[in-house]
Length: 228
Image 1: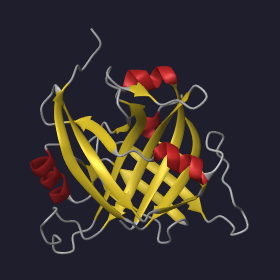
Image 2: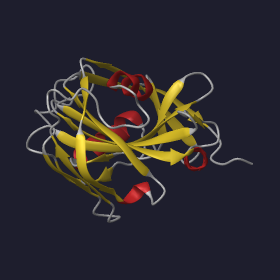
Image 3: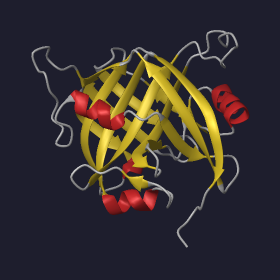
Image 4: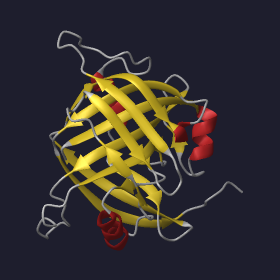
């Protein structure tokens, strides 16, 4: 992985519960849930045991909420996006995940300095942000939820994620092994995410640099879609 961005928005516990399937409960911080938007740049993609797909690179993104499935802390990822259509098709075939949405994306030329844009051509959703570098002497961001970068990492890091699958009433669990990513806070001078909604309050942004990621599909479970 080259870079992973995390833009955090505060939402109410009620909205988080309405967003999650009924068998997941939101992880709250002082009564507040966090809705994150996570664009990331991947290079040298490959299926485990197979060679890299000809140096294939893509920009992917996903919204997520940290939750609990009754056994552990997990991420709920209701949708996934990619600029490379072959990545979405490959993930659907190999992992039985839900259909990837095609996006157009522009990353800053520097990791934490410049314009950031993700556009969903099919639905006209848009995410835009302007990033500025933090001074080297500035050790902390302006988050009102996470006291330190380490506190953010503890909250954000989950070993598993649940997502919709290709079958309507089944959900896919992906386990993630990640190593070597170093996070740091970013300054955001402007931000607009159309899907966040008017009640979402922007809280903080971080960028993770480098690291290796391995996703493994470990369960395809039938679960209730709605509370009866």
